[in-house]
Amino acid sequence: MFNLLKYLLVLLVLVLQSCGESSPTDPPENLVATRGNTTVTLTWDEVSEATGYQVYYAKQSFSGISDLSNYASLSGGLLLQNITGNSKIIVNLINNTKYYFVVTAIKDTLESSASNEVTATPQIEIVASAGALNDTGITWGGNDLSGNNPTCTGIEISAQDCSYGRDAKADAGTLVKMGGGKAGFDFTKFDSMGNALSIQDATWTTGGTGTESAGTRWSCVRDNITGLVWEVKTDNGTKDSDTTDDTHTNIHHKDNQYRWGGKTALGRDHADKQGDYFNDWTSLVEGANTANFCGGNDWRVPTIKELYLITDLSAQPAIDGDYFPNTANGFWSSSPYASNPNSASLLNFNSGNDSNNRRNSSNYHVRLVRFEQ
Image (cartoon, rainbow, N blue to C red; front, top):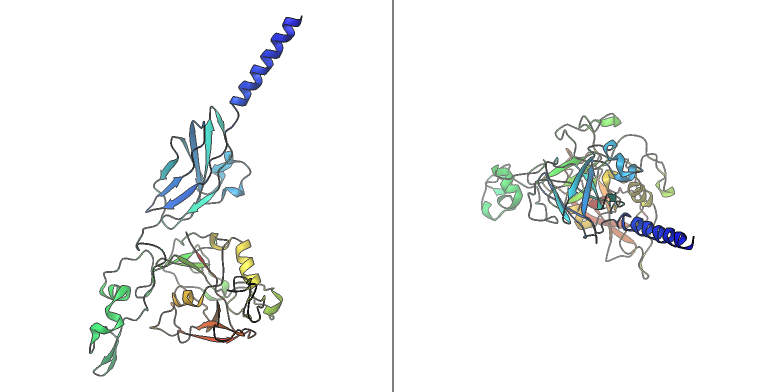
C-alpha cells in the first residue's frame, strides 16, 4: 500500500510539472509599427522559449473585442500564423488607412495573451521626414512693370518667394503630392476614426447634412508635409451660449469661443506661471481625447508657430477653405505673449498675421492639433 501511494504521488508531481511546461508563455513586449508604401513593418522583443508568433491586424482596435479569437468580427480583421523571428512585414495594405496590430507568442500548442496594441497608417513617403515646413502659398510675382503679376514673372523675379520651394514646383507641375491642396500644400481629409476619406475632392456641405462616405464632410485634415493632424471646425449642432462653463452641444462647433489658458496651454502647470489661466477650452481638449477623435488621444492646442504652418499667405482668409471650412478670424495658440503676462498669442486668419490679446477675451476660437506618428 505504501509503495502504491508513493507511486501515485510521483505520478501526480510529473503531471503537474508537465502541465507547467505546457502553460502559455509571456506575451511579446515593445511592439513597434513602422509604416511604408502599402506596408507596415512590425518588430517586438523576443520571448524566451516561444516556438513562434502570430500577428493579428484590423482596421479597428482590438479593445472592441473580448477575445482575440473574434478578430474576424473587426473590419478587415486578419491573422498571420507560423511566424518565426521577432519581426514581420505586412504587405498589400491600403495607403492612408489606419491599421491596428497585436502579436502573441506560441509555446507548444498554447498561445499567450496579446502584446501592446500599435497603429500605423501606410502611405507613400513624399518628404524625407515628418516635421518639414510648408511653403507660403505665394505663386505670384511682385514689382512687375505694371504692379503685381498673377504669374511668377516680373522685375528681379529670381529673388522672389514664388521662384523657390514647393510652391514653385507645384506651379511648374513638377511637385508630386500624397494628397491635394493649393500650391505646395499637401493635405488629406480624415474621417472621425482617423481613416482617409475614399472621396477626397468633394466640397463641404453646409448645414451639417454632409457625410464622410460621400466626401462632403470630414473631421480632420492631415498635413502630409509636417505630419500634423488638424481638427476641422463644423457647422452641425449648436454652440453653447456661454463657453466659460465648459459645456457645448458640439465641442467642435465653428462658433465656440474661449478665454485663453485651458489644458495644454504652455506654462499652465509651471510652479511660477505668470498671468491668468482660464479653463474654457479644457472641455474641447478632454472631449476630443476621450472620444479618440480621428483615432488619436493626444490632442492639444497648437503653438503660434504651428498655426503658421497651415497659413496660406496668398489668400484671404489665409487658409485653404477646401480643406479647412468654417474658419473664423482669430484662433488662440497655446503660446503666452512674452512681453505681457496678461496676454497670449493668436493668429488672425483674415490677414495671416499673428497678434496678441488679453487672456480674458472670449472672442477667439481654438483648433486642436496632434502629431501622427
